[in-house]
Image (tube, rainbow, N blue to C red; front, side):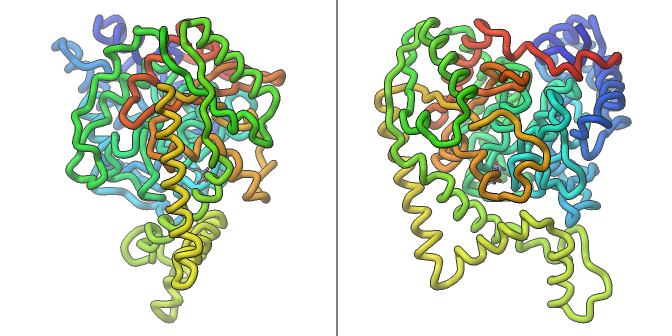
Length: 493
Ligand code: GLN
């Protein structure tokens, strides 16, 4: 097995026993990035020298013994997380040269755990998108088929993970941006409960929805990484004041007796491809074989979730993005005659079309006279959606659904049709609106050889049930073990 194919659990065993060094591992990954990333284009910035320095330090820690499971493990970070001394662009021209002076809490926690920052991954600009085509720099390709999108907005992270360009990749999820790209790239990702992971130092998109989480080869690795990055942070006022649990504790408990909710409306959603439906039905049958009971539940307002999201998220974005005015951060348009003109040209040139579209929608929805009709109404429906989940969770412990309606679509296929792009998140958005934890993992492959994913959602703070169910599933299946042909054919490391 190649070093770049290892899970974190495997790598940390080898590192702890000193069978490999962190430096060796980092060198193998960097060689792999050099060979494969020109095709996939998952990284915006690779931190080769810094990573090797950090690996040497990790090797000293490992030599002393007693290091944690992430010590010496190379990870990729979505370019939405502030990294001290390392450019943080949000894949936007407006932040192209921005170098933060501090680390996001997630980054600081990973470094504390001894993880090695390998680089920053590409994304849709300001995390707005579902294909990574909205990156202000270049689109990332799906490692399973280079003519297709990897999903988004954390498409760089998911593609890097699938192509063997890191051992874990961190993403953020506002409406599906961890789960949908994980599904399209055949890897496992979790969006934790809102407030579980600190948002401090994450460039804000929609503050009431944004949440960070890991993308990994399997659920066990996700549990390892989430244990390291979650927990209360006084620097984020919405961070939940509860200690970070050790999510790896009960992974082997199985699903006997687990009540698995099947939301009937979701499976009737228009646009759900028969192949995806079949793969998810197969996953349900397997959970039954493993001892779970299925119960039908109702989420009657599922069809309103996308509309609600596309009021609330742009509204919050329009407010959050007001800070990019050419004065405080990054790019400033030169040669303006007045302050107003400087604001105008900076923002028109610095932001791409999707970001401008969202700012316009959000500003409109919040304006006097329309606030009640749009933002207030959307917030009220959001509350109803939360109640629907509360009712559903009275009769089940987890809810199962597809992640995305179709396997990965072709690059260019939806860029000129924002509505078609927005519908990519029809199954993932409800968990963000309700603040619930949700996990995506591979459950099959299409006739064209593209990975398809299944989603599990649980009650607030019950990530443990998701991990337990996902581990049982992955123990009984091999979808997560498959690698894209690209990753196998190239001769590296
Ligand atoms: N695709 C959704 C959007 O464009 C979700 C993005 C996200 O989760 N960051 O807003």
